[in-house]
Length: 73
Image 1 (spheres, rainbow, N blue to C red):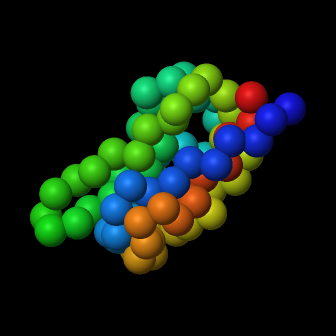
Image 2 (tube, rainbow, N blue to C red; image 1 turned 60 degrees about the horizontal axis):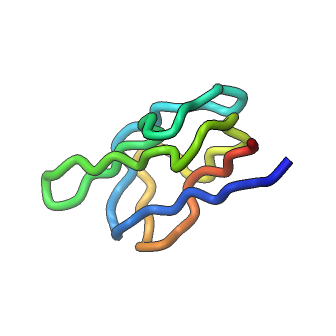
């Protein structure tokens, strides 16, 4: 199975984690919600698959391009 890395599009803090390891997700499903400058930015699944790992925790600071979730599928 191919592993897909899902990255943050901007520097932000992790506000909420919506998906957990083992969860089946569809393309467009929200995996994580980031917060930056009082705006909520959803990190969405680029394709159907299963969440293999969530690499961040709520409250973490992430950098632009940082991998936040690994998908299998």
